[in-house]
Length: 80
Image 1 (cartoon, helix red, strand yellow):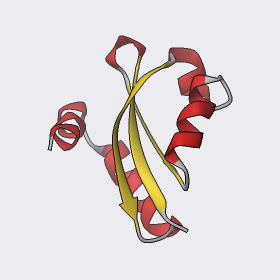
Image 2 (cartoon, helix red, strand yellow):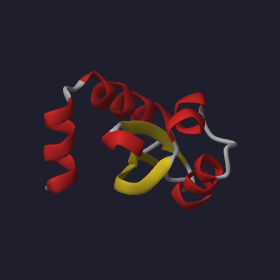
Image 3 (cartoon, one colour):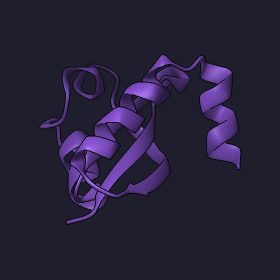
Image 4 (cartoon, one colour):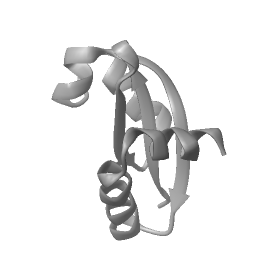
């Protein structure tokens, strides 16, 4: 099973980072209000970035790493 880390653009330009095994399914959950509290509050505009990880542990470590980054570094990752 492949895990992915993803970044979503939400209303007001806010960024949300998460991890999942199925990016399309998780994106639909966020859009339908069944995702996290943050995306229920701010909505989802679009998927900006996704990267595959070796396993769940690696994905959660990478997610935590990206969440600690300042906004500009996250945007640089998306642009690369």
